[in-house]
Length: 414
Image 1 (cartoon, rainbow, N blue to C red):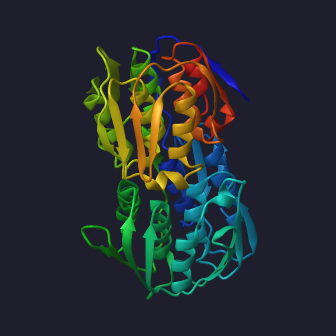
Image 2 (cartoon, one colour):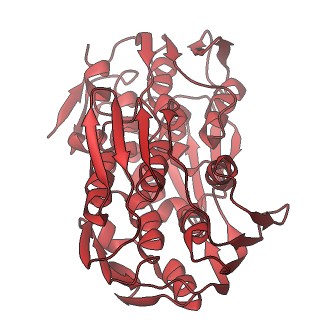
Image 3 (cartoon, rainbow, N blue to C red):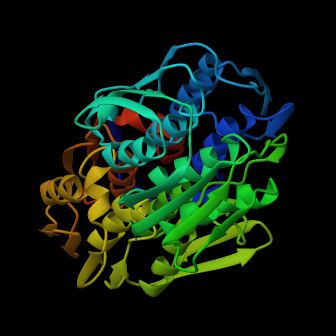
């Protein structure tokens, strides 16, 4: 599906959708609880629906009701299954670790993008912990079979999802099992803080170094039901915010929690450094721009998902913007560094790829036809750019936005 975005000022009040990262973590943990969980206000998106299907195949009873998911957990994995994670990398990496707890062989696969994403580091770590692993070049389809025997493993984490998977699964290993994890490289640290917040709520016994380079987790935990509302998503909120600032408008982003562990709230600090206003009032964040945007230098290591959105804002800014320490954005749904450089170039913006980021020279953003590369965040960023461009922008493959933010494109075209 293609969508054409005509230039216009973007104003309004937007209820920010629930967090995908929180929803998927809660679903997977709820599927291994002793009891029934009621997850309120979950995200309803393609990735979450893929996760629901995976949880059901593992044996959990997941019932979809208006504005909530009721999930009865499964005591143990007892039957061989093939799990299709669709396009959800979060589900792939976390479910691979959790599927390793059972004695039955579990195969995980997904769409063409998923089958290009490497899980090799995670699989090597699982193998060191006693799990049987089968894969070609560390990519899906992947087969894992427990039991999880524990011990010590070493894992470099260009994506934090590897470590989140190990941390979520290891407490559920058999009583007496101890899992030690050495982490010489960790990107996206806030997502680990999010995962640890759930372990804390569950009363899991673990030790960690202050720099997150070492973890020691005791097995034998039994997860309690995961109840309550899912927080709104700062990653998704970045896109209506970008639409407002590039078009000279203003937006109220409703439902956000300024104290949430999500790292992507730092995106709004970057907007302020570029000349925008970002003001909190209760659970709403008000974003506006009164004057010109200015370039800057931004380290995206902890918040790589913001690269498409901040790249678009930079295209409208005066001077150069340099995005650094984000080499791991090359291993997301697509190579986001290369994709944004290519597509912004089609719109008349000079972008220079760097191994770990982009240098973007702001200027006049022309209209034209661009490709979303099958990546929900690139689609949404390029669509937002259309609001402030000289003429209309047509985005190819716009349906990918539904992976995370169903309805976003409708908001832009209202």
